[in-house]
Amino acid sequence: MTTPLDRAREHAVQHYENAVELMRRFCAIPSISTLPEHESDMTRAAEWLIEQLLALGMDQASVLPTGGHPVVYAEWLGAPGKPTVLIYGHYDVQPVDPIEEWDTDPFIPTIRREDMVARGASDMKGQLAACLAALEALRAAHGTYPINLKFLIEGEEEIGSPNLGAFIQAEADRLGCDFVLNCDSGIYGVDQPSITYGLRGLAYFDLEVRGPQSDLHSGIFGGAVHNPLQALCELIAGMHDADGRITLPGFYDAVLPLEANERDVLARGKTMDEAEWKRLSGAPAAWGESDYTILERIGARPTLEVNGLIGGFTGEGAKTVLPAKAQAKISMRLVPHQTSDAVADQLRAYLEAHAPSTVTWELLQLAGAPAAITRRNSPPMKAAARALEAVFGVEPAWRRDGGTVPVVGLLKELLGVDTVLLGFELPDAGFHGPNEKMHLPTFKRAIETYIRFLNDLE
Image (cartoon, rainbow, N blue to C red):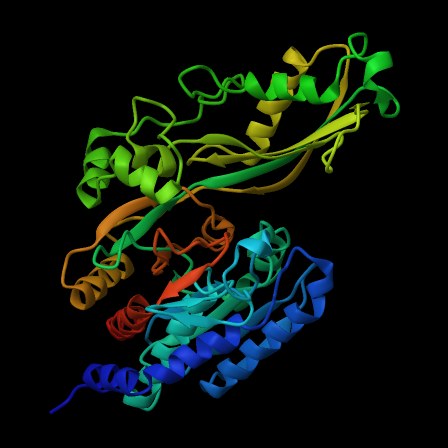
């Protein structure tokens, strides 16, 4: 006699091509949240999700306004006494620049060998499509759902979720749940499943340094006017010491040391030697705090990065200009107990101490999100580990990721619930870069993993 789990798995196998087509259709919508010219595409993506959720039998599904792009909300509460899972995702994607480095049109999803190449294929439309396909299979097998479901799918994750906190606070009663399933994460490799239990937070800044009132002739004024670009570069260069440590006053005061047992847990999951890091990153060598492994540096230590420098003449040919201003985009990845407001104060204190009197400066904080840690021994986390081991045939590793998913910290802070990060991005998936892709055999395993995980929560 077959079980509902057996029937759901078989349904997923029989309808696998439908799931791939679902991902293709979703990825074809250019829902780039940061570009105003894609406003209508954002609306189209949200409405497309409503159609899919209603087709899956949700009791209700609606597009709810925020101060920016809307949130897609849906629910099915037909399993009294069973857990309620809030499934989180985002329907927005990153811009496609540099477009010339794409081998195919980023919004004409293309299958190449074992990959679907498209913007959003791995981050995170492919993951959402896998989860929706798993729900369809569970519904077909059970005739209903074995647990209660709620959906929170936002449209601003790729711009730092600026309106999500206010939305969650206003809709706390509607969003109430036992825990959150977040599909926006990854695994170590095609045969190396892993579960993310820690995420770094984010603080993002726009720093502008000003000198003369307008651009000047570098021959007439050069040497007697402090070039704002030079001053900015000098300030940035001083933000790290020779060992890669950040020099902002008090920056490490809230950073807890990594305990030996946690370092052991992280090391058991995966090793990352210099050669593998060079292959993955394309960099000529690894860099950073020498007292920590590469995986610890990118998952459990704070950072300060310069994301962009703007100023002066950057066109073809020559123009001998001394620019009036220079601008830097600066991001920090934060670990638990650091806050975006605290590091903003530390950055201002550094600038006040080190900026020369020959220039003025202005610092704007553009985004902030808390770091998050989830208990590895909670029942949902154990269910996720069982599901991954059943599908991949090996015990999953535990990992702390360097990226930021703002909603994880927000939901913990505002609703008091933990999040299971169960996603399937691969390290070489190219998310945020050209030729982003979803590995289709991994996509197939993702569907089965979600089936097993959600079925195991009865």
